[in-house]
Amino acid sequence: AQSVTQPDIHITVSEGASLELRCNYSYGATPYLFWYVQSPGQGLQLLLKYFSGDTLVQGIKGFEAEFKRSQSSFNLRKPSVHWSDAAEYFCAVARWGATNKLIFGTGTLLAVQP
Amino acid sequence: NAGVTQTPKFRVLKTGQSMTLLCAQDMNHEYMYWYRQDPGMGLRLIHYSVGEGTTAKGEVPDGYNVSRLKKQNFLLGLESAAPSQTSVYFCASRNRGQLNTEAFFGQGTRLTVV
Image (tube, rainbow over all chains, first blue to last red; front, side, top):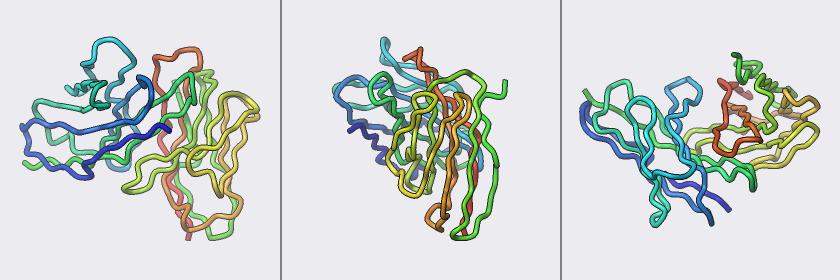
């Protein structure tokens, strides 16, 4: 069964510092991978997605993620965090064309210190 | 573009009451999904549908029923609400014809069962 693990429940970084949020997935083939962000009380916003090709993908708000097949990982990065990046971040994996399910990780809550 | 619209946005129910959450999409998508979001657990798939007249169980289907009588609508029903069903519910839809696409989410329904 497909699954997604986000090992960090909470992360606190200083404004201007770099950020990396971890995501590991379990799936027999190359999945479709997504990162979503949710601000308090809001819905989900897609940050970026990976389907195939270049393993480094660029998203909105200066975020990027790298797909590493050997590590079954899809970590999210940002070189310099802004206070407005404080939110909850969700990694998700899809098996479009197979089960057609989109499965989410448990999320990482990011706090940004001034 | 309205995209995915959920009705209602907020609701308070008493234990044992029933209600139906409506998800409507105007993108002619074949696939639709219902999730619930609880603190520390991410989004968990309740039920989903791959087309009009079809439904399937997700990870946490107990206590919920769904119907997809029209392609654009996906209804989530609670026959006898329980406090454990207090949650934020999200609906999503996706185009079957494109594998390299994401799911589109509604803004959520916050349900409290007292």
